Amino acid sequence: MREQILELLRTDPQFREEVRRLVLTDDLLALPSKFEQLVAVVHELAEIQRQQGEQIRALMEAQKRTEEQIQALMEAQRRTEEQLQRQAEQIQALAEAQRRTEEQLQRQAEQIRALAEAQRRTEEQLQRQAEQIRALAEAQRRTEEQLQALMQQVSALVAAQSRMEEALQWLINWQRGEMGRREGERYERHVIRRAPILFNGGEGGSPYEPLIQQRLTSVLSREQREQLFHDEESDPFLADLVWWKDEQVAVVEISLQVDGYDVIRASRRAQTLRDAGIQAIAVVIGREWANPDAYDAAIRYRVEWLIGSEMSEGFRRFREA
Image (tube, rainbow, N blue to C red):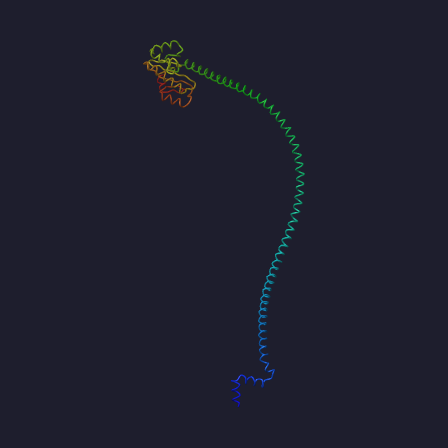
């Protein structure tokens, strides 16, 4: 029987349902539906809890983000407060600088007012000085006009003075030249008068003397005299002294200071007589050489000399002839 009941329970759904209604109460029979309802409710609650968990997580994430934002805001607030503190300090420093600037501007304003007053006084003084300068300029102009007139007078006086100085210098030079010429002439006459002593005998004189001119004319040919017409440097008639001694004749140039021109004239005039066949020597006589070149010229042109108390060897031989 038992096995049949169990078999029916396993194989006969209708039988199994009738047994369930007989064995179970209405409450127990209602349990599955209620359980299903409960499961649905649990599922619904789980879904709600899941949604709430997601919301909580979202809220927590939002809270976290909010806390982070609050932290960032607090940090920004801290930096802002620090910046505000620095700005406050800078503002305070600027205020102090502004105060000092205002004080400095105040002092500068006072200085500017003082300078303006000084400038006003300076301008008044410059105005007075300008008037004085104009007066001085006018006086200067008049003075310059007077000075111009005086300068013209002075220029005229200077020109006259210059002409007088030129005339005086010319007169002095002429006087010196005249004195030198006269001194030279006196020395020349003195030498000519002492010629017999200087030459130790012999005869002769200045070509001014007619006898000397005749003697020179007798030794010079007509052609030579014609040649001498245009050659004064070679003309023995223009020598200072012509002195004969035996067969020799000395053609002499006399000067206080014997220079190269004296040497050359004596040489050329003696050469004129040598060209005429006369044993002529050139001689210069003076107190001193004008310069060393004159002595060198005497050696070069073979001119004998008596300078002061010194004489050349050729002059000495002429004296001993």
